[in-house]
Amino acid sequence: MLTTLELSSQPSLQNTSNPMGNTGSINRESASLPFAYAKPTDSSQNGEREHQPAQVVRAPRLNQTQPLDERPTTPRRSSLDATSTDEVAMEGNDTKGLKVITLAQLNSTTTVGLCSQGLAKLSPNVGLLYNTTTLQLCCNELTHIPPEIGHLQNLQIFSISRNQIRSLPDTIGLLSKLVELRASENELESIPSSIGRLTKLTTLSLDNNRIACLPFEIGDAKALINLDLSQNPITVLPAEIGRLKFLRKFRLDDCPLASSFQYRLENSVPTLKELAARVIVRRQVPIVSHLQDELQEYLTGAHRCSFCGGPYFESFAKRGKFIEKADYRVPLEYRLCVPHWNTEEERISLLFRPLPETAPQKTPQPGATPAGTPPGSPKPGKGRQYAVNQEE
Ligand SMILES: [Zn+2]
Ligand SMILES: [Zn+2]
Image 1 (cartoon, rainbow, N blue to C red):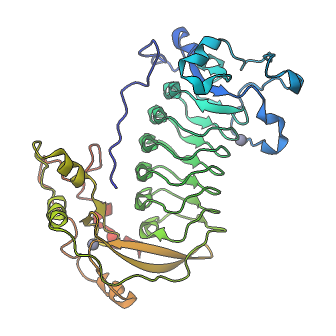
Image 2 (cartoon, helix red, strand yellow):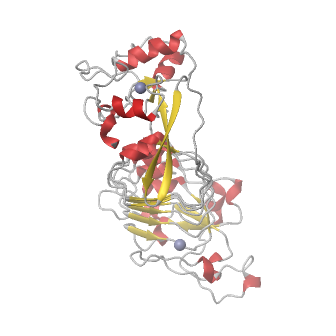
Image 3 (cartoon, helix red, strand yellow):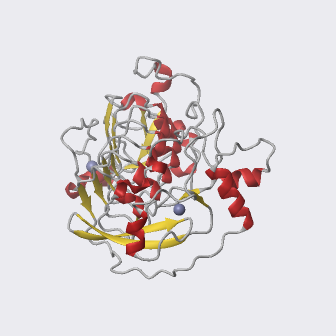
């Protein structure tokens, strides 16, 4: 599914429009804004949870000398102590009883290291960290990442490993400078398709989650070198993985990978609506503004054939192939707009022929926004759609 990524121009701020100014320092007004909420009990007491990559500067440590039994009632004296109970109430009941960490309490906004700080919730104000290049939130108790994370346009390293996060916001795809995304040991069940927009991403750690399917768009994250998918219920991977030319460290330990494919060779016949929509997308016919909303939405939901790059909607044929990669026999699944082949011999012979006519047209009409293209997408005409045979 192609998704449209939108964020309001500013994160939801309580009372200021340009809190960080152009200098990167937090001004007085915004310094008191909550950045995160932490459990009063210091989870870093447990030494086993300790996890601290060397390059990351730590936030001030909580004072650990306070006796445990005093914690709920006696606030500890530390730079991360709650400053105002009113602020706790601002973001609703689920932050009651949690202590507030304000932006002012971060000792740097460029590198924010908050490993093992008992963080239970992030405020949307996290979007104010425009200048942050490293954000380390690992070994906490977060369950949710607010969509405002997409405002962190300078973020290069983002670590949220060892939390209880169930999903990532689509806006993660807006982090165009992101090089490392570490989300190991969470409860993720899926990865947003916008991951394909992270064209600088070299390291993606997703081990120890609950991911069964990866989006085919992962094949667009061309810079990927390290991909760890160990300990996920993955049985097959999208064929587009085969296009990641720089992939060197690829881990699939303890994934229940399929050892054979069983697909029906026939596929369902597309509806007339789908056939028409395929032509519109393939020829990049501009979507007229008075088109019904439902149809516009349908057209933007085009998927891309794993072989020819042509569009399909609900109707597709599955085919499988095994590749040897990093000591694994990796089952790759193709989703095809039409049954381009039935046997491996047929597939290989197709590689020596011109692309079928189901492939998208190569010359977009000048000035048109092609159907099926979400706003802000790279213009077709070059690259991925037409380079479908590169995986070989
Ligand atoms: Zn950590
Ligand atoms: Zn196709």
